[in-house]
Length: 279
Image (cartoon, rainbow, N blue to C red; front, side, top):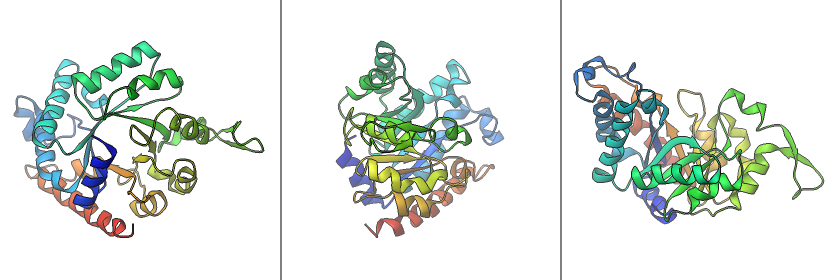
């Protein structure tokens, strides 16, 4: 999916909601355990119920890998279903890959060619040659970890680092990450993860990367504010994909769980439409 196509979908749906398919077999409704593939059946019903209110879906691969081959098959069936039935939705493999060049090439092939995701999350710690292979695929995206929403983000991301481009000051390391990584590609193939629980940082982030899309976890169950993220993080083309996982997919736990997910997704979309009217 191209940058233009993604912006068009956001404007059309008046939504920048990404739904995280963090499907835990220990949390899905009990009646689904009688299905041949409980994880895929859960995902399918969530997708069918929420697709009109969101523009993206993001399976976190850990929830599937933890189940071995059966989980991987559930992931494959989920992305195949999305690509066939809802091809206008942006798909994110939340895998946080990133390794030496030849290994990253294989990770990129796995998610872009074999599974046919639109994007994959990437950890940039090993540098440019670990990220560049993900940028060699047309209309595919690397979503690079910039500043994350977890408590441990402070251990490295906020430590002061000398930046040769700003010779008079020390800056948080995540500034350098955003600045350097944005030079490896363009706004057409690089997004950055920016955690909603660090909403006060969005002004700084936009000073460094004003035009790139930001994937924003942490809204909902993690306590991040959609209003704050939208106020400080939105650019002229929206430039945001705000992810919500548990708040939506586990909104209900009975046979009508998908209806509860639909109601929660609709509520988020309606709030988003208000903020979109301001750009």
